[in-house]
Length: 445
Ligand code: PLZ
Image (cartoon, rainbow, N blue to C red; front, side, top):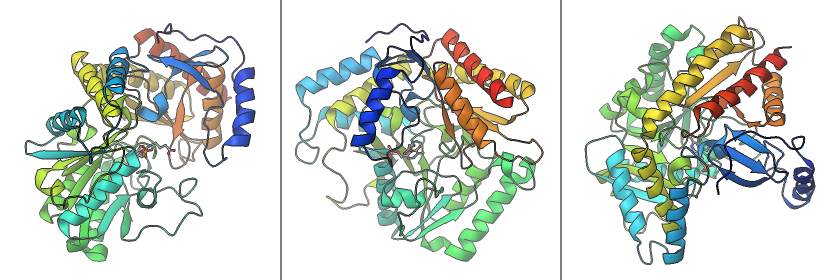
């Protein structure tokens, strides 16, 4: 579907048709399933979402980091359609399919590490995380898992247990999975003794904790997001991730990079971990992997992945051929169109504008990011860094009213994160940033 790549408002947002649908939604769908933007999509293409009232919105949200190659990219749609007609599902455990095997080969080659690898597929990010943990435990014969403050790894029982934030993700939904240990993440902007000491101190604390209170020989895996997503696009202080990976290597602990949000070109590389100079034992991917179709992957060292007995991994839909065919088209598109480089270019444009916004608006406490994974952290006062959560919510709402979909993030709900398609046209990106700038100005009051 080809929609002109322009912002166009024909009603107020949300418009009357979206409001009507939302009245029905409220009677049919539980309120626990949240809606960030109270609009209903009719169609989408490239960097534009068109709602049921005919409004065209610039999309800086991409279904939470799923459309790095843009909405309904023609090559991806064609690949999925072709596969849909050939074979929709036989279940990989019953009879295998070509896209599954080919995609496994591609991810084995694309993920960091010059060694033999294996990839298995599941349907959601949470499921990939669950499988990465199962595999680590089986491969090491150990049970403890180390996770971090501000982490998000999903909503299923184990993944929710790994996730940091209690509200809304965990409140009242325990008991949680056992043998999970949480350590501080090297969050430079909020490190008590300042960003310069963040990496060294966070690392010293983490290794000491693992030694004293968990015991290295009990730890199956350390799982982390190389750039934290839901936690607020936190780029860890330099050296922290590499230091942890070293510790893991010394003690036979699996190092799992959760690249579900940061991967597939978002942070300017196939995988954000590449910029840390770290080769993980296991990588999880999902979201932008299949351009909107539900698919997730666990890729890891052959001997680790093969530690699980026959029949110990899988599921009915994992590696569905339609989703896998779409993913192959996504990978081709990223390669053919040089989208990793383009991601870094988008990042430069955004970073420059964010810097200007920081100079202009007191509300902007921190700007950060890598590649096209950029964010602004808003504070009431630059000295105390008190989170400006209400202002953040007001900005998201005003952007929507002005035709821009943007998402907040962060443990304190005070981060504006940008997830535009990497393929977005420069002029549309600039226009979206103008809308955001105006909204921050309005909230600064
Ligand atoms: N790991 C790093 O970002 C999903 C969550 C949206 P699923 N992030 C969006 C919400 O409110 O539930 C995510 C992630 C990282 C794992 C996941 C989980 O992926 O596909 O949502 O299960």
